[in-house]
Image 1: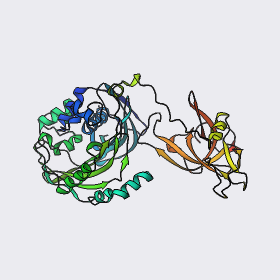
Image 2: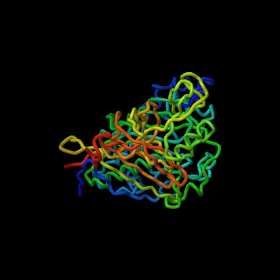
Image 3: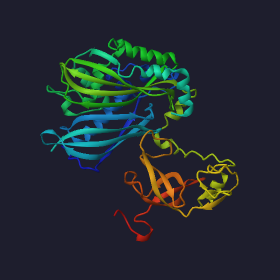
Length: 136
Length: 329
């Protein structure tokens, strides 16, 4: 099913439990072997209280959140994110999104600009904008 | 950057040396270690919980957000980094900024990546920031921009910002950091620093009066409160109470970074009071993106927690003469 974007539409929130498994699986799937994403002891030595989610995983989750909503034919065109408070194990990140603009895309598609935010127990983990192409 | 940080940069000359790397290559003719392939796509989708049908089956494309993953060095590291980029990171390491955290990622996807695509990439150091102090510690932001090609054709661009920093002395406690959302008390706004030079202002706020200082010698009004007159230098003063009318002289909208107790986006206004002085405060009663220069506002006092009240400015619908109005015009 395809959801037709309209400016002002709010996407239903998505809660992501930030497990140690998700952090490590995301880091490995993105081929990011920085120890702060899988080795809690090494993370503490570097001043972080625990392992934390890498930016590629956050990027992947933000992309998934938007395409989940707009349906199987939705195509990501741009994803721009900024990270704030880290995603530590045991926390929950709630992604929310709002369509802030809609324009005509190529080949009779619609391009929607979606503002996305991911909040966790510490504050804003991620803020960003996603451009997604949706067939009409 | 604070004056102190600027002075620090000037003293050690590090920033000038770092800035010399702007425009230099960060990676030259890099090659993805694996061609785009179904197993890596499937592992990614499993980790992300992404069931998008375009990423499965015989005609699968890679999730666009995997763009950077195809360029990663993995466990065996990067052989593609340029000498210049290595030197830049080495300079930062040498200055004590040994930790690294990614802060921004901006990607544009020009064509889908399909299994079998051979990935090549080039990257350039776009900018190095002056020395910044963040919650994590002090350091420099380094921004790189990468062109990712598939079979020689531009498939996407990837702008990436890292902070190379020296960790702050006291990291947060793990137990505190891992508290679930509902267990965390809402942080309180910072307390004002009240001293003998501004105590009268806060006493006024407590009595719901916005007090402006007036020079007893020359009559010049001043705000914020200061021990002496900027105009004539006299130390004697009294106060006048602001009538509460004002206009938005200028404003910014705060998006990022969010601070505890503040809920961005919100508008911060420079309000010109009818008396002629200006003060910084929040503009309320209007969406952050509807605040405009010249907008009439009226003073009110907002209780932000059990012990703190602040003067804020509420947007006035049509100016004082138009009478009460509801909603948007």
